[in-house]
Image (cartoon, rainbow, N blue to C red; front, side):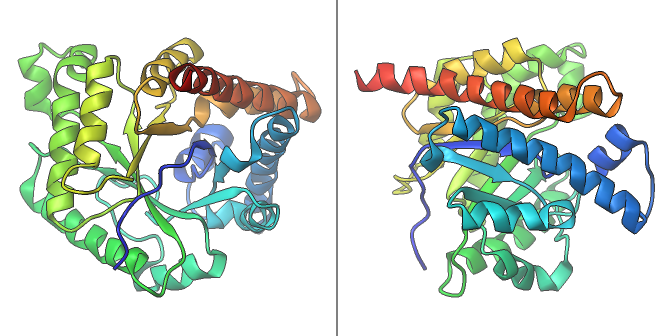
Length: 310
């Protein structure tokens, strides 16, 4: 099996949201009609066009990538791959607390149908949570990891780690979620990474929830790269936070070697899409606004990286 690792810069625009996109953006529950599916796909095309506009405006093409789902974005995945962009496609069922494969035992066939640069999973894993749940998830994740590191796959492994607070953890902090994020979550994230590595789960890139302190970013890199995993990369995700908070996280992470980029989705596209669908702005305005936001996040990271090299 190949060694895990990817240490080139990655500026990812993620819009692989499925259940939440369908419900919160469109207000639709349950099975979709072909017309509804096409309408969601058309909205995702707006996001993709925003991504393209940002690259045309100066975001380095070799660092630019999209994360979009097969259900609503198959055409976009193929177009982006043909144009030479980094592509990422999710493997998990949408909106579940426990990781499972979107396409069950056929997960490999769906990966190979698109050959994305990265197969991505979103996993909620708190090491102080349900041990049976954590073991069950780790078992499935090792199966995917082994496949992606084997000879049959050309795709790399991107792991989005979420560490939601357990109720007893919040109780210890008097229900203060900000205190959890600052005082407790960084330690739990490092512990989760170690546990998953010990279980045989070997991502090439870890998607990390935003961290306020440089020392916590350094701890994530050290953990992700421990015991010879020297080329494993980390990227910061946006968590749907406001623009100012995302910039703060990007600025902090970009100063730390081993943080190779970001994946910021809702902060980039949600408001422009809502305004476009409400008729407040034109489609072109939405495209340009999405592109501008994505480009500005890339610029924050580029500026910090240039300062490090200088």
